[in-house]
Each structure stands twice: as C-alpha cells, then as structure tokens.
Amino acid sequence: LPYAPCHIPASPGWHSLSCATWRPRGEWRQRLRQRCLGEGLQLLTPDSSTGATERYRLRTEAAGRVQLQLGVILRHFGRHGVLC
Image 1 (cartoon, rainbow, N blue to C red):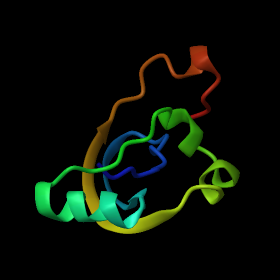
Image 2 (tube, rainbow, N blue to C red):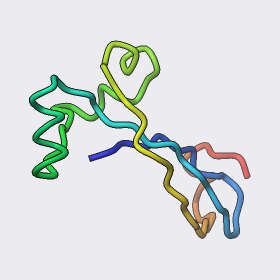
Image 3 (cartoon, rainbow, N blue to C red):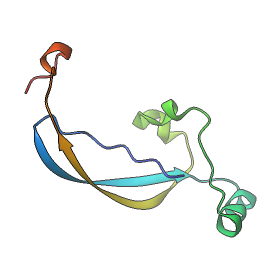
Image 4 (tube, rainbow, N blue to C red):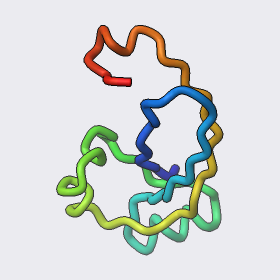
C-alpha cells in the first residue's frame, strides 16, 4: 500500500497533478511476502507519515508515481481562512 503526499491547489478549475509515492520497506521476509503474495506493509498510524522529520525515521522505498486529475470548486473557503 503506497502513500503519496500531494498538495491540493487552492485555485478553481481542473488541475493535473503528479505525486511521487512511497511505501514502508520491511525486513527481507516481509519483502518476500509482498512479492509472492502481494501483501504490503501498512503504517499503524498514517498520521506519522505527514511530516518529513517523521518519515525520515522510517525505512522506505519509492513506489512509482500517481497521476491525478482534480476539479477544484471554491465554496466557503473564506470561512476557513483560505485566500482565493
């Protein structure tokens, strides 16, 4: 199960994004199970992966890229302090 941090644009319209993904790198036994059985490692607390300093402590490996097409609609953003 790969993870991909990506910033959502704060301007209206269609946006094309490319996000680099990563996944936790386990011991050799876990990597073997992942290759043979398709089982991937998951973080117990995904919140720990949000900052660069927290991810720095993890052993990770690149897992490719994800292409996203997002349609952003700005509604009530001003109520939440987002400047448009």
